[in-house]
Image (tube, rainbow, N blue to C red; front, side):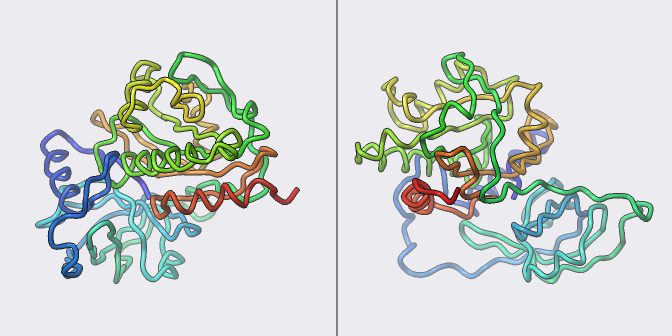
Length: 306
């Protein structure tokens, strides 16, 4: 998946409205909406025309630069789950497609995808690929700047299970960065209730927008997501930014795609569980995980395979 979708201000306002209607996750999620107990509303369907930007077969998704979708959204780049996943075998970057967008509360996907024009890339030209962190891969010692302006590195958390997720603080869409930050807040709350486990787990929210996400901004964002101004929060849940010089390599390793335009960033979501030995235990692409999934990972990553 890919988040914060790029758009000019009028288009952004239009899509924000659509996103808020379609998705309910947010950094501080409220109670269920009235009528939720009466059953899910019928899925809505829209016709899409667009161009394939990238394909991620492991995640079953593709980034699509779609034309305006009547009654739904303006033109923009968006990540879509593709159903059935086997359809991805037919797609490559640059292809023109048509499809049906199916929208339900909290999720959406493409069906009936048809290629209407193939990429003009010359034969033998490599297509865009996304690196997938695999279990057992050793994580490089990337350097970061945290909410206190202190330089930190991933290797300093050896001996702890490290939960790492990529965000940027200006992300306006509830089902992307705000949702993963909400889930991290839930994890932090659960782990704080288990002091034997608390010292063996560290949470790290990492911004790929270093120009805007300064230590001061990250500190305020952390307090907002935690719903607290207790500075001890940062003892076990840090907020940091990737220095520009490290960003390309960092993004490539963790399967992050991003593009800045019009003041917003189109990006994928990437969350990793790193074992105490500094190796990938599990990697999650997109937002199809919950706090309970990572809490289970914490329980089983303590004694990873060597």
